Image (tube, rainbow, N blue to C red; front, side, top):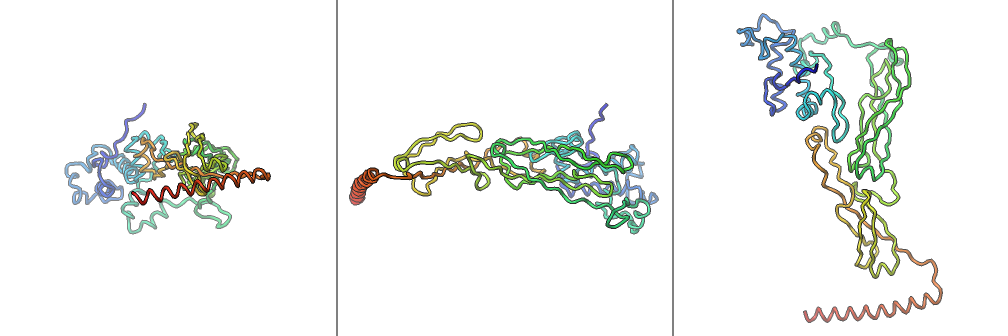
Length: 368
């Protein structure tokens, strides 16, 4: 049977709209009353509720359970990302993991070391804390090749390039990445085996090249080291039709001849999302001429941090780059004498008409 969700704000006795500083102050007020290392002889001096047999508002719950709930509540609410997930998805989303717009958030797991949370706030619980910790809670010792007996160090990160097609960038997608890693297969940590592990990548629409997807401590498992991170780096796959420019614009190149450049033409462009755009060119296509179709490029990826990504999870992307159409001139490879003669005659007559047009424009400007 599932237990009811724990209200962390009620544990700290604070409203849900408090600041991070107010959360810390609420924790400090309760922690000095519940810390196992406190001297109970002086409770009456700084805990008024103790006069009534109450240390906190959570009484008559046992002090051990109050202490555990207090530190777990602060471990969540004192972290901006954990708090944002808890506020939006509740304790169930926090413990089960959620799919965020910029990647998967793995299930939260409380480490269970209450004094670790306490020390993070108060810095220490005793002037002799370093000595006491070394005796009562020594660090895990492992044999290492470099230093013999010592504390575990983290392995180097593994980086891999993942190539994305422009179609995948346009619509977004999910990619399952299979990695092989060393894993410990026995309790004594004496045997290792290479096993396949699957990681899920959430590719947001408009993802730019260079975006890094980090999976914390998903590397090889060795008994003497901490697993390194696995990092996937997005890169653009060459496309036969389009080219990305300025992160969110698409460039399309179209071949034309001289007659089309002078007289105009109509053509169609098949988009990445399977639509067809009708492009009408009525201007003279001079060298360097570009036709820009607004909002027909790639979506503009917001690349928000995890906290803001949760807040904007249901908002539809409405910002897009532009489609930039550039033109390549196709010239004839060879002209016969007759073709050259006709071309000269055409341009001679063409120039006469052009000069007449310029004169008419000058006269019109004089009288206007």
